[in-house]
Image (tube, rainbow, N blue to C red; front, side):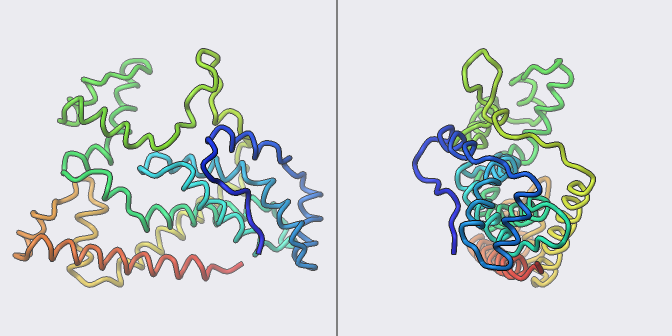
Length: 284
């Protein structure tokens, strides 16, 4: 088909510089190219539509940078979603490409996050899992009390963990690169500031809300198709604020830890298959 700009071993900042070299299309030019693709299957038009929107993929991917995954992996998945959107985009529907594409970008990234289940791998103990789910919330609460300053001892105390545990989890959640890092120390300009910042209009906000509703409904449907024991394990191991350990669930069902792990893996495999199938079959 056609391909987006490849992401290899180049640094993140270089990739940002490269995608910024592609101009954002105005509505008229975007419509003209989309018609060429829709009517004539013009792959050159498709390539231009893709490259002009790569910067928006980075902005969407940045929303998922705290899931323990590399930023470039998230961007690559988002680029796949963008390509799918461009392929299916109908220029006669009356809205901009990015309004339509943002669903596909987010869906592809969310599918990647769910399929890899980094939230399970980020920690092995109940304390680490609590940190994963609660760290950002706790830090924001501390900052609101201290006027914006971080307070490591207070954060650790509020979560009932050690300061070293907080520091370790922060490093894990930072991933490969932080969009909040300053390009030049002291100047205040970050990598995220270099991207186009278009405030979402009412149509985009509505689209985002509908996308989340569709995703939540799809996940709920996937979980409802699991067996009773599988549903319990997914709920208590994945979605609970205080996830149970393998041993706790093993004791609850009077089975071995290994059997719990097998049931969990099988349940996640079923959910991944259902989500992949439904995301692939979304109507254009």
